Image 1: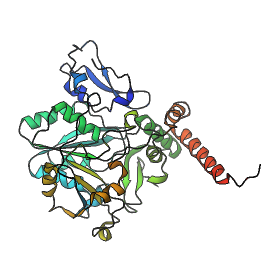
Image 2: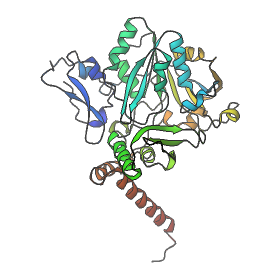
Image 3: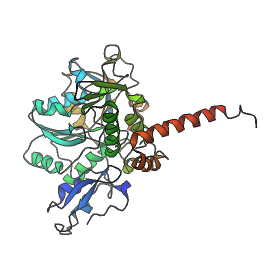
Image 4: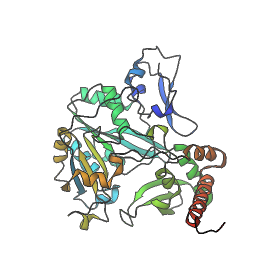
Length: 381
């Protein structure tokens, strides 16, 4: 029977819930705002499958690489670029899989506080899978549906974080020929409790109900992307991501899931067939026309991944680039996000004072410490 004694050893991939023959396991939120498996002992038959399927308890190897092939990529359809967070490579992969009569799996935000992995086999069903969602996706028992599709000889494109891909591989106990996996380079998984705290404070201050959020609004350009908050009364609040309270806390590692510390999947070779990220430092031939729209970084780590990516080239403008350029541009290709020493104190304080008050106090103390550091050596004692 699965027991989570160290929260750093659970990524909430949901493999345990998917494999349980009695449906005794559900993923529930803890006090910090992260999902963990909960076992209904009335249903558990102590078969041990949940322990054996856990990818964090048994290190799985990355796929055998043929030498990673790296591309910069942008959708040829410039109108579609406004509906995606980066260069749209993920949408090209999605369109191609559905064109081949395959099935696509990815994260969908169906409510302000509800993000979950879903299945799509038509383009209109897949459209909500576009754009970044800076929330932990509720995996439920989605791996069962993936297995059913593969067993029915349907080709499948599964997109998620590295740990979600690892959970899928562990559940399937193999790498089926019809499966293409695509991981999205992430900084970490942020706390849903912190996000709820941010939204509640915003609604109180603005005296309105939040009905929609776009995490990567590109109305001012890709590199000046904003978080856009839509209120029920029609107002839209936009703020640059770099100064946004929730996003800044996320990037600082203050609200990260414990298992993100030292993530074993932020490394080369990557665990999936294809890896996607923003290509922030790219300056190649695609840059002049697409600098404001977004440019995707695509890393193909397997022959299957490269073959499938090649099938999307009618939808994309691409340029092959050296792996070293990709590593320089995207540090989390090879390195996990560093742990923040104030993370536990920040979350504990937030439970008392609320997220926004804690964030504002943290920012104020940070400015004071920066000022004192600048003054060090200039003040006579």
